[in-house]
Length: 445
Image (tube, rainbow, N blue to C red; front, side):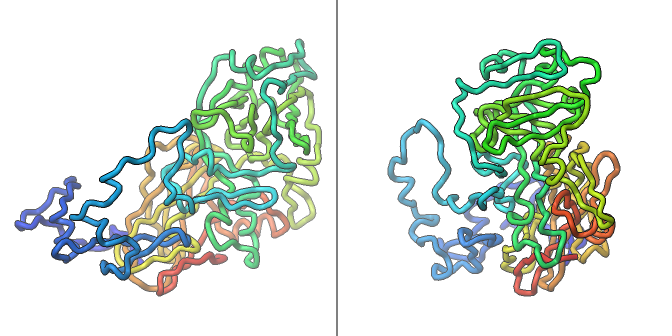
């Protein structure tokens, strides 16, 4: 298996034998039919990766192999061009042909379908979920946020009060610290990228800088920690350094241009860019200022990393540099050898991704992938690598580097340093195996 830069490609030319300019992307029906080697208006059917029962792979252009009715294909006029479609609606919906692109729910979480997403923004309806007592149904008119403790002026805010402050919008990733926890051990690795890495998403958050809220209450000297509490039945609480809140913390009420969805913290939540997901308290109702962490259940018996010597790492807030190939990935099938693009996402809680390397030979050699703009700090970054599969069995991997110089480690490096007792903060290189028949599976490497 080779990246495309290692493969010699013949220059394309027009029907008249005149070379087509490299930047010329114009296609005509004539050139398409000629390229497919079909005549008399026969159907041209593309080939794509199959990632679920909802994606169809057509490996030849015969009507028998295609689920598309022959009379809908050019030069025929399909029925949907001869009749009116649905009229404008109050709230948009996606095509029913995309109904198979859904989250993968369990009793406590639902995972984003990473292999079926494009770019870096996750739609609100596909943004991952993680709850500790279900989703509270909160009337925003009755919700309040109290800021108290080591402050000069204890304050109670309504949602309308919060919206009166100057707002800001930022694009950041959000990741559960248990994301990819299954990949610590060989007997628990997940079969697809949705199941292994699906507890990460990226969105545009809109709200008020947390320092604005804290300054309104007047933090007293020595108020170095915050206790944030949610309004859910679990009363989810976490201790957060005041320094983080004053630097880039947000109290948000909007997501991707609309109000937060209930499962994402409606009507308001805390966002600490780059910090593990559970610390970003949803449905936030209380912020207490103090001079030390509160040692709550969620930062003692939970969300700590038990090391081999019996000592647990605590307050490991930062989500470190990570990447994963999403296409091709586990559960998909590559229908044939030849050109395919390797694509995936990379992210770091410490800042921008500066490089992603891809290996198509199990880590023996690495090739630098293209980072698709925009490349933003603390955000998902899309990477791409042209690749020609030779039809032989092999493996593919990706490795991210962030602007601090941190390089995504191997599975061996992670497990040697941390052991196998934890399920949090697993950010090792992920390996996908490709069989000769094109089937892609997860392997422990």
